[in-house]
Length: 185
Image 1 (cartoon, one colour):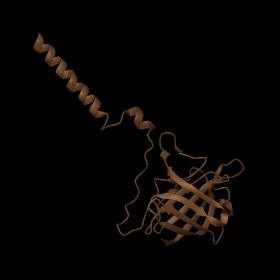
Image 2: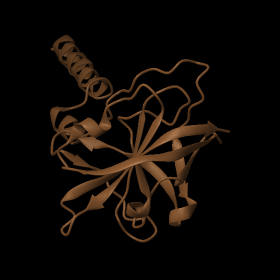
Image 3: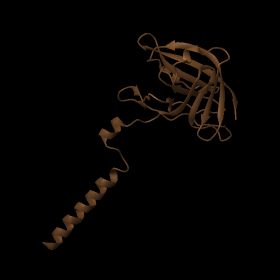
Image 4: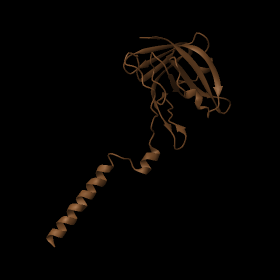
């Protein structure tokens, strides 16, 4: 009887260990559906200057704000948003000197991208990265798109910055301003 008790108790401890340990290796189904996971972006070579965007400045438009990571939730087709900071779409390229489309979005409100619609030829943007680099971009073009147009997130052969905010009477469109890289410090 004592041996049977020890065998059953031992089996229960092993089973409990397996169940508890599995939580560290595979997420539960419920947690997986709520998790915001960025899609990996293309690899950049070691000689490429790159960094996580942390601040954006557009002096001529009086825009200067911090940048935090923004994630896409595939379950409910939504993006994380902030009322006080710009968001870097983590599924796009980080600012870098080689290639890719860096996508940063924010509300069309004072302190964020309220003045973005005033961008024009000659408008310059500086994106500072967490590792201290400054990427300078120059205005290329602007246009409105439907919110469901995901082609605006596509990678590019040359380094590019796309800024996005809402437009339209009821904020029904997305206003994009595209800039090309002119320098890195």
